[in-house]
Image (cartoon, rainbow, N blue to C red; front, side, top):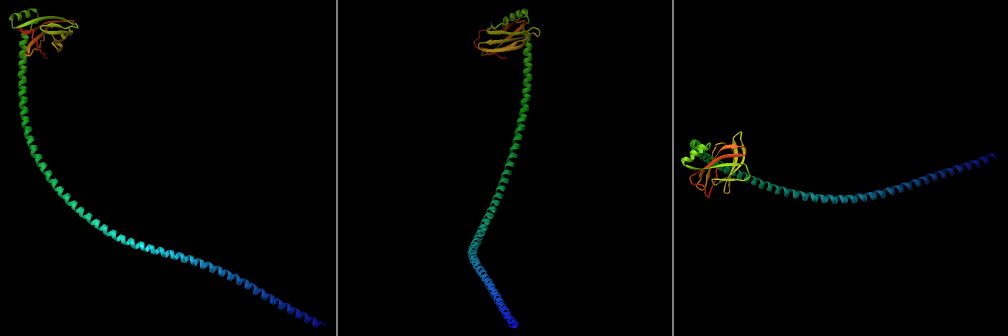
Length: 286
């Protein structure tokens, strides 16, 4: 009875082992199928992604090729333009060089002409300077001669004035007695005056006199002379110093002499040529 149980148990065990093995094989195959499915899905995904990337790369490559073609055309055109520009620049440089050479020649010609003109001006200036020097020397000689003549004439005039003053000094009356002596000679007419300081003018021998002030210590006086519309002021006049007055169109000589000075008072006389008082035209001179 034991053997059948053992056999039965063995069969059951074998069946269970076989079943386990079958299940294990199925499970392994199922796992492998699942993994293969996953791998296939990943491969399809990668293929789709690579296909998309390849498409993008192809599009980009086409664009790059188009751009490269345009750039090449532009470069070729630019190279042609550069060649043309170089030729034009070379022509312009050659023309400029020619102009510079012509300008240099013109400058040299102008410099030569300027040097020639400058030399001519220098020569002319030197000649004119020599002439001017000669003229200056002549003028200087004439000036020295004129200066000598003027000095000689001045000395002569001074002598004549000195002689005239001496002559007048001898004819001046310092008091009433000397004035009477001059009257007796009968050479001139004499008109005495006694004038005080006032706002009014006094008429003497056809001339109006006005005393402006006196300095008794210094024996000086200030007086205003008037004939018609002409006035002459004399300041700081000394006692017995004659005042010469040329009168009328013939410039007849009058003389005014003050021989007495008091406070705000002078006394003296005016001498005139014979019968000259009453002339209508009178001129005054310092």
